[in-house]
Structures are given as C-alpha cells and as structure tokens.
Image (cartoon, rainbow, N blue to C red):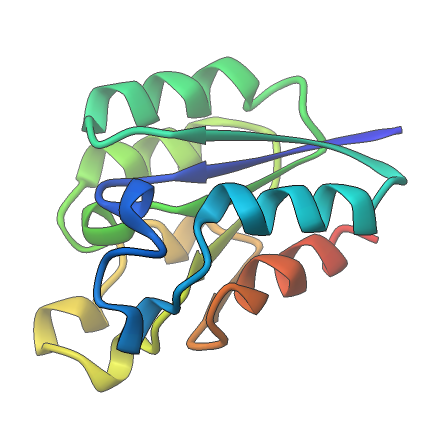
Length: 138
C-alpha cells in the first residue's frame, strides 16, 4: 500500500473559520476523513504546523520513506528558501497544492520556492486540489 502524507503550513489549521469566501466552510479534518475513506488504496497521513522548521523537519523525516508528499506550504511557499531546499534534498516526489488561485492574489504569491523541485503544482480548485494531487499518485 502506498504511503502519502499531506503537509500543511501556517494558518491552514483555521480552515472552516478563516475567510470562508476563499477557503470554504469545511474544516481540514472533516475533508481529510472523507479522502481517507475515498482513497483506501493509500495510507494517508496528515501533518500541519505554523512553524517553518517543523515543516522542514517533517519533509526530511518522510522524504525517503513515503511514496508521495502533498505539500501546501501556504505563505511559506513564497518566502521559505529552507522549505524549497528541503524538497530539493529528498527522494519522495512532492506535489505542491494551494486551495486558492495564488495567481489571482497579491503579486508576491506568484512566486514559489517549492515549485522548481516539485513533481507538479495544483492551484485554485479549493480542497479538491488535494484530491487532484492524490490522483496524480495513482
């Protein structure tokens, strides 16, 4: 059975409460239970942190043993050379995801330190972005 992990960055613990017009009203945990039951051919784990170093540590921890990482580094996507370097340093393929269309937002969100090292990037499909990323590992 393939092992996947979803790693979420800062403020994504507030899904369901935070700016529902952009992020929707579903909490990530509610969504996560749905995708775990829908994709039973995978073992899917989830990790969220608001702390950059914890995200880097988790990428390094799973980056040689998991079959795939779905990474929504959130705001760190646009600011963290360290997270980009961590993705470059591992063997596990990474799909970068974003709930919102980052290209419709502020100009600084148009750049990603993760994308050059990722298998692919999915933006703007709401929580379905995660599901599309899972499907890329089928």
